[in-house]
Image (cartoon, rainbow, N blue to C red; front, side, top):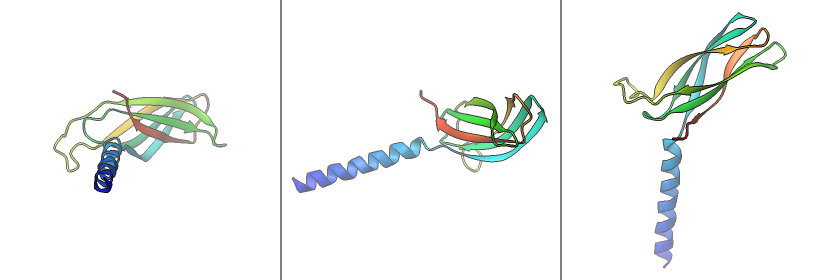
Length: 115
């Protein structure tokens, strides 16, 4: 009985760790530019498993760190493209409309999109 419970516990932990690693999404801010008082551009990289669609929330900030622009971006799934990391990392450039001049723009968060 104790062995069966131990085996079930190990199987459950393996399932949890595997299912979470398949949905891991990370991002890295690369840069930004402010075109004018109505537009900012954000450059960033997203790393996820090939074939995983991702959504990222991008925000533009003013000099007082107030959010002056916000956009959720859809990043479609991509197959293994033969690159060194197998298509896990993709570069993105996103334009964000702003209500006033921004001095910074960053990725707030990214997550695997529901299928």
